[in-house]
Structures are given as C-alpha cells and as structure tokens.
Length: 246
Image 1 (tube, one colour):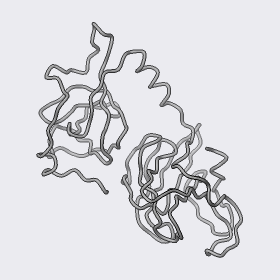
Image 2 (cartoon, one colour; image 1 turned 180 degrees about the vertical axis):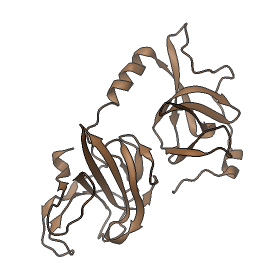
Image 3 (tube, rainbow, N blue to C red; image 1 turned 45 degrees about the vertical axis):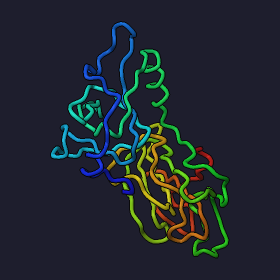
C-alpha cells in the first residue's frame, strides 16, 4: 500500500482537536453527537489502543464513524458494531446534529453504482478490432491524467489487489447491489490503496489512474461482472456494459 503508517511517523504527529471530556454521547444541550472522519487511506483498525493490538480492518480517507471517546493517542470508534481503535493523528472529530445524522444514514444506504473516475469515455464496451489481442472489450475506458483518483463504484469487499498480466496494477471488488452479486474491475492503475479482504464504502479511494500492464496511455479500464469475475477476450461472458449502470 502506498501510504503506510509507521511507529516513527506516528511519534512525530501532534494530536489535536479532541476534548478530554469527549465520550461520544449525545450532547443534551445541543442535541448533537460526534463522529470522526478518516483522513488517510489504509488506516488500520485495531482491537485496542496501541500497536500491539490485532488489526481487524483497514479504512480509507473520507469514511466516517461514530466517535466513542479516546485513550491516549488513539480514538475509539464504532466499527461494524464493535468498539475499535484508530490512530488519532489520521482522523478528524466533528459534531453532527440529530437531523443531519439521520439524513447521512439514509443517503449512504443506496447500493447503486457510481462513476469510478473523471474523464471522457475513450473506448466503449463491445466488439473491437482485435488489434490489442482481444475481439471483445469487456469494459469501458475513461481517459484521465495519471494520478487521478479512482473510487469504488459501490460498497463491497476487495477480492483482488495486485499487479499481474494485461491489467497491470488492478483491483477487483465484490458487491451486493439490489440483492444481486457483482464484481467490479479497476485496471491499469498507477497505485493501489486497498488490500484484499478490506471492506470499503461506495466512493472510497481505491487507487489512481495509470498506464500499467497492456496500456498505451493513461486511462482507467473499468468492468462490471454479474456474479464472480469471468474473463473472455472474444465474448461478453458474464460482463455487462458499465455505462448502463452508471
């Protein structure tokens, strides 16, 4: 992972913005509660407030969690129904009114797909000439400069994060959308920001646009497969046209 948090880096950080009396409970006077926003990709979630405790997950920049308090340089959050800890130097605490909290909860419950990066479509889905070694293009290409953020098109679990073959640097994510299983593919990345087994929300940064593998220029190759990933260079197999879902 590009951004790794080390003991040395943590010791150099100054933790600020956390009141000593913070408990994560609703403030009776303001009808508010507190959340924290993650400020770094690949931040480790641990079972306790130090490096000796077990890592149970990783979270990315932009994700938010209920604030439950802090212990030393560690912030306690509600993570998948459990009390967990993340390093305070990479989170920001903020106040949320009861009304806002309900609205946010509703807006993030959608399971639809969203566009994974910016830029125009430079190659569409379907039959192609075969000049690049395939006669069917199983996804769409978005032309964008190297380093442009690539984001998860839907919430899911990372099943592949590696450098291999024609895809170069690539990530695959398994989703459940409206009760149907899908797998999305993000290929030719310049970097990857997630690891296998990580659960990520819709819109989480998973890497950056690049030109690795079988690529002739900077772009994101994006695929959606119904069910598990199945590749075919001559037919659609179980892939679907991503533009019909975005």
